Structure formats: C-alpha cells, structure tokens
Image 1 (tube, one colour):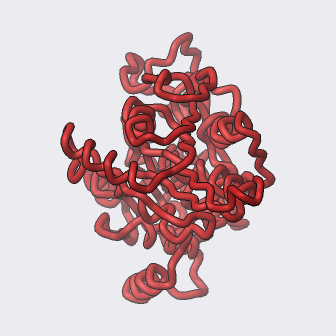
Image 2 (cartoon, rainbow, N blue to C red; image 1 turned 180 degrees about the vertical axis):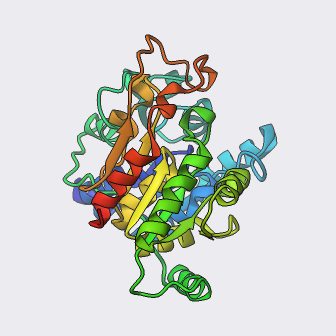
Length: 348
C-alpha cells in the first residue's frame, strides 16, 4: 500500500454463523498484514460479536441486526445511511447473500469484491462461485477473495479473543461445579443447526458416561438457546451426572471454558471452531456426503483434531431432507468416538 493511502478504509463482511466468522479470521489478519495503517472494520450479526470484539487486527465491529434494529426496508435503509457516513473504500464480501452484496453498493463503497452469487452484479470484482464443490477449505475460499485483490495470507490460524472477564466467570463456574485444576475436563457439544448434522443425543451420553465411569473425567455439556432440548436429552439419558454450562452464557464465556478443557467432542457446529481458535483438540462428528458440506470444506483445522465421517453408499446427499434416516451419522458408533477421545487424552 502506498504512503498516501495509509488511512485506507476496509470493510470485511461476513453475516452468517459463528463458525463461518471464525473461519474468516485468517482473512482479517491477512488484510491487516497487507494494510497495517488502514482502518479495518468487520460487519457481522450481533450474536457473533464475541468472536470478533477485541480482535487486535480490527479497528471496528459493525453489527447488522436484520432481525431487530435493522429489520425491514426502513431499518436496512437507516443502516445503509450510517454505513455510508463511514466512507469505506472497499468492501470484501466473504459470504454471498443478497443483502451482503446490496448493502455496500447502496452505501456507496466504490470497490466491492466477492463471489458472483446472489446478486453478484452489485460487486465491482466477482469471483466464480464454486464453493459448493468443496474442493478446498472455507478458510481458503475466503483467502481466494483476498488473492483476487493482491493480498496473500501468511497464516491460516483461527483467532478468537478470550477476555479476562470471561475467564473470571468460568473460573467461578468451575469452582461451583467442583472442578479443580487437576481434573481432566472434556466438553461435549451435541447441538447443531440442522438434523443432518446432529449425532443422536443418547450416543453423546454414552460416550460421556464411559469417560466419567472409566476415567473420572469431568464432562461439561454446552449448548446455545436452541440446543436446550438436546442438552437435556443427553443429560437425562446418562447414568452419571454431567455438568451443564447454561445456555445463558455468552460465546466469550464458552471460549473461556473450552480453553480450560482437554478436549471437545462435537457435531459440525460453531463450538468446533471456537475450540480450534483457543487451542483445544476436537473430535468432530460429520454426516452428509455433499462436497460443499463436507469436512474437507468445514472440518476443524487444529493439528490434533480428528474428524469422524463415514460414507454409507448414498449417490446423492439430500442433507436435512434425507430419506435414509441419516445413516451416515448412525454409522458412527459411540465406542469409535470414545476410542479416539481416549487416544487424544492419552488415557486408553
């Protein structure tokens, strides 16, 4: 970047889920490495604020709340007016939606780069959208957007800030849960955004029971507000008593907990990537055959992470419309997950 552009203003847009935003953090760092003196903002949904608030490579977090404050035409219009006042020079759209392509156009951001999908004609530079082919990881699809404008990444590591106040909350939670510094703590995350990603709850319970009964592991079950029923199914189906982190805890507090754990066992969901970002090994359970939904695109990227994924002869994956009872998930047995978990914990 030339000297006269040191106040260059960059907006990175990623308005989807927790894991998606985390997988974009290498791109955030790459932008900062290329534009060390720029003003860099990120536009995300409010429920993922903890993922990026405090990221040292960002100057600003802009929350786009399409379900509340920015709901409807007038709410979105007010948001666009506010964004226009910020005078960004370029918008980097890492996940194509109609709104994420339209909003920077209407906000008058002169350069707009992203994938040619969902009204991609609002962009000034468009990449062919082949993400559904799942030929590479989502991290790399985001970095491809940067490469198209001359930015290369030196680091593919995920980053999530863990603030001291979140760590203090978790320290108190662990004290109240009778978890000491000597205990081996394993987190279990049985929720997911759709049925095609959910390993049966009772199987999580069986793995947890074995870890507690055989190895005296402290098991903490985590889940968000949408996962309350699933968390209760795991808990009530168990012989031993697990510890439950209330769904009222923030994402930042979940990150602080996972940082204290020796392992996370989880479906394909946001906590997988939180764990990777804080350095905790993961056993991630995947269903689905479709390349665009596969571990190759969405799997954890930590050095010791293990993906459990089986093909069961499906010619076409219908994902949540599966007609075969999610055989790909059923094929993954509790004893297999337990064996991998024990190996990662060094207790088999």
